[in-house]
Amino acid sequence: MLEVEEVGALKVFAGEVSFLLHWLHHNALPLWLKSGFDREMGGFFERVRLDGEPSRQDSRRARVQPRQVYCYAAAGLRNWPGAWQEVALEGFAWFEKVYLRGDGFYGSLASASGELIDDGFDLYNQAFALFAFVQLALGFPERKDEMEAKALALLSALRAGYAHPMGGFEEACPRKLPLCSNPHMHLFEASLAWEVAASDPAPWRALSDEIGNLAISRFINPESGALREFFDHDWKPFAGDKGRVVEPGHQFEWAWLLSRWGLSRGNPAAIAKARRLFEIGTKHGICETRQVAIMGLFDDFAIFDPVARLWPQTEWFKAAATLALMNSGHERTAYLLEAVRACNALRKFLATEMTGLWYDKLLPNGRFVAEPAPASSFYHILCSIYEAADMLERMR
Image 1 (cartoon, rainbow, N blue to C red):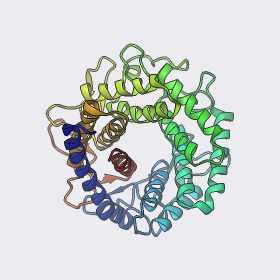
Image 2 (spheres, helix red, strand yellow):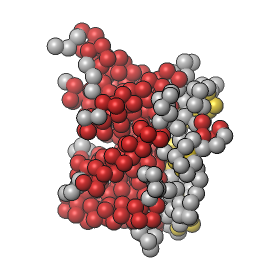
Image 3 (spheres, rainbow, N blue to C red):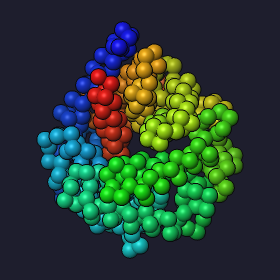
Image 4 (cartoon, rainbow, N blue to C red):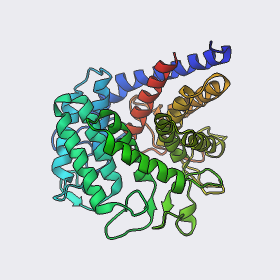
């Protein structure tokens, strides 16, 4: 039987989820369908101005395209009634046409007119290609076999050309340093999704286990429990201040992933690591004055970047909701209250004059930077809202 305080916290959390779902389905998705998709040239715009007009001349990062494909395909699975099929498929076709290289990998940057201006390999971009493939497989069952084949081919190419001898992947071939935990986080996200969607989950379970174990053994400091960003070729912290970087947003994001993986594998050590990452994020990464998650700490938890961006708020929200589901009683209540606190932080960024857009950066003085809304944030926002909605449904 639910405790009184847990019932109250769950009710407040449910109200926040309801608000965000309405904002997403009635404001953000329609606005970005109208202003964020380039119906003349194809593909998705990099940014939308705060007056609702696209920032047309921006060059376009490869990572943005599959993120937006994911958003509309995921919305379609939630019965959003807009033209999600058209945008998801046309956006994906443009991504393939513009960024796909002859070796099966994806380049990094295109001009506004769709010319590939940087064909360099970036592990991060390959991770989001895998993530788009799985969402398209779910959203368009008739293309599932095609998407699964594409995903397996890309995974095979990554293993053949970029596998690191100690686990994980190189940033480039020949070798490039530092090695980074961040792209592995998104590979982890994609592999966990493919475990559920694939006809044969074995290759994806192997990838998930490889990255999960790498995070526990190498990315996370065994003394403090904090997850670092940059490493040398032996997966040891990179020299100098770069190797000391700890991002609160990534503590939350890895907490979300490790808790899911730990639960699926019956691995209490992974769940304990996830809880500690979340604790670090909330104890050291939240500005007491602005009540928002900031961008950067050092490994002693001293602040080095006090700017708050939108995306860490979404990861705080998502991780809190997931950990709430995995606990009960007073602990569940505590995580639910953290989710509400994170939602309050997120709402600050969503309070633009034109509803459906967002601010990206909140300065230490409490003022937002007046700049176009980046499309890259939509993935974080939508994923966190749907994750929270799923957790709510399972807790009721």
